[in-house]
Amino acid sequence: MSTTTTAPPTPGAEEEPAKGGKKKLVIVAALVLVLGGAGYWFFLKPAGPTPPPEPGEVLVMEPVQINLEGGRYLRIGIALQLTKAAYDADGSKALDAVIDLFSGRDMAEISKAKERQELKEELLETLVDKYEGKVMGVYFTEFVTQ
Image 1 (cartoon, rainbow, N blue to C red):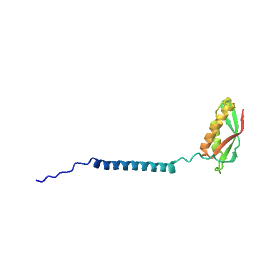
Image 2: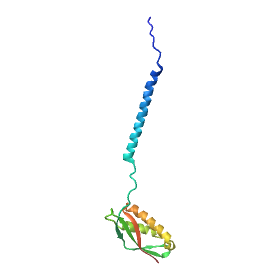
Image 3: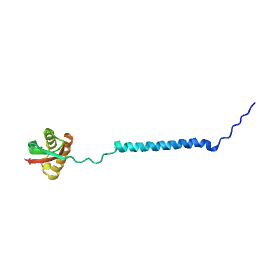
Image 4: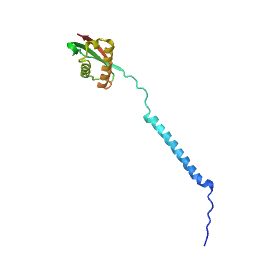
């Protein structure tokens, strides 16, 4: 019978592959983080604040009469401050929004300057949405109640 003897394991021999594996893992993780950061920087980074739109023409519309609460009415005229990007604006959406916003309101409510300003701001928000950002301002050219 033959006997074979094996040398006892060297304490540092087993740890070297494990250390090399950990080093590789750390290097790969660092590389992934660097590449991920670079990708974010070039592709997903916010562009910063967008410049405000440049004013274009002002679209003045004929005044309309709107029925208020209690048999009264409001004669209101508006003008839209368009952006330079707006080239073929139609006033029908704006008139529809004005009628929706002011119809049936109490005359005492719309006679107050603060309430009128709040309604104007609400109208502007609606018009910016309806005209997809091509309206940047709204002006009352006529505002008569009776």
